[in-house]
Image (tube, rainbow, N blue to C red; front, side, top):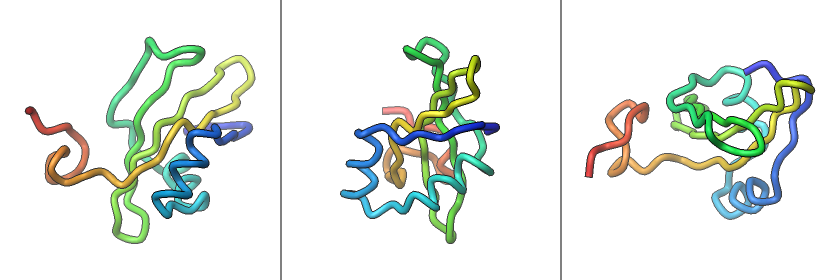
Length: 95
């Protein structure tokens, strides 16, 4: 994802701390991740769910982007639970 600036939300910082996710890993996902879901109705900016494997571990990052400034906002980051996602962590399992 092409970002001129990157900001971490307070929520993202809290979740990353409690989940043991390093900011460098989140940056790797933003820089090289694959968009697996789009959320065009999110406000104040549309967001997307990115997936990348960092150190062999799947990592999901939700990021939004202010297209007028190029600033990206990290909303949250987490290691996806295998019970909730398909084998490659790209699609949610149906309930």
